[in-house]
Image (cartoon, rainbow, N blue to C red; front, side, top):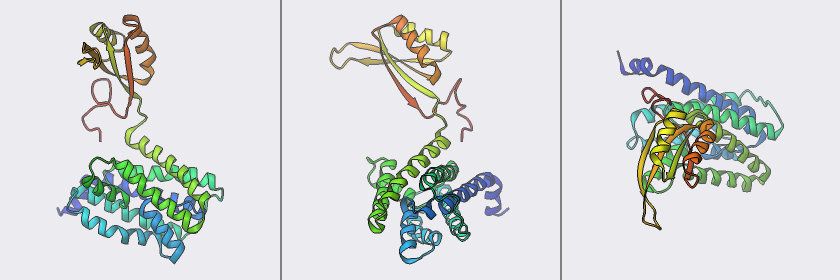
Length: 290
């Protein structure tokens, strides 16, 4: 069995999901955002600007601009990342050009185009990201910059690069209104991507600083059926040692947890943070979660 056949046999489902995401992303661009002059971020936005200025096909331009990025990334990232990113980049670019040739505009209402275009864009790219790949462009560039400037978050780098493209589009074509609608598209798409990658974030992590740690930990187990861990802490001002109760609960259990803590220690200090994912007993299974 040659390597290509073996790859398709073991990763065929992921490839199919990736390609479906490419088509959905292409529909978002060709049928909603592009006909209404809503600019995309990253290299897709650059290709869109070049299309409006020089008439160059958007998809082909995206592929050409990605070539040097992939050549650099080939040696720095894993083979799986490169393969799935190639599928995502080429697939979405081909979909864009093929669907653009149909000259279909599903709505001329720019607000509807921004919202539904963002929804489909997030769905498409979210499916691509779930396979471990990217759509190329600023996703790869952000990772490369992250390696050199490790103190900067990936999201921050991507946001800055997208902002540069959007501002350039607004200045060049004097379409500041379209640039504002772009922000709506980006917001909606990012929410959908996060939903696909991290779920509904239905779990919360709680830190409880209290004088009755063991009583509260036992009550959490008895009433909420959740485990708890005791951490050692020290007050920065008083220097006193304090126990901190750490536990993960479902969001709907927070009111019950607050009452439970109040019953044992009304002066307790409670911090509740949202968690994207929690693995373990009574939560997601840590095995085969991808």
